Length: 66
Image (cartoon, rainbow, N blue to C red; front, top):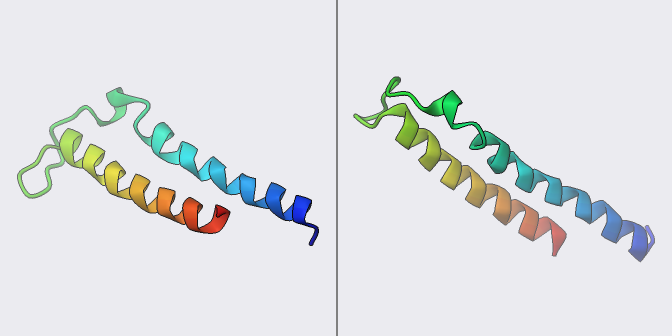
């Protein structure tokens, strides 16, 4: 594979960084008290779950694109 082509293929992985943005873009979807998880309303644990998912996606993109 040519270096130029390999670089272009790696840039596609950056599109994964859009996923957390879309997951938290519409608060009306997750602005609810139920279901609860360990006593935390859905609104809070859903956002915290995206913090963890975003970290994993960012790590994945970093490791692949470097």
